Image (cartoon, rainbow, N blue to C red):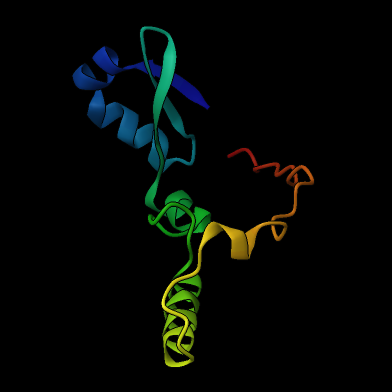
Length: 99
């Protein structure tokens, strides 16, 4: 991964896009703190949906579930209905391949 400041990105955007197109993500920093990442389109599409990681299938499922619950007379689910359902174990570690 290559780092570039926001100021540098303003001045050299075309070059940074070429770097990302070659498969090297560019981490943009402001005052030394990461604020964004520039990816190639292919890398972005491999990472999933721009809806915050929610896949299209999950959205379709959620809508269907809500419709079914409404048809069964459940107007809205509250926090209590979901208490204890969350898996509290740590998530898996994902290693991304280097370009």
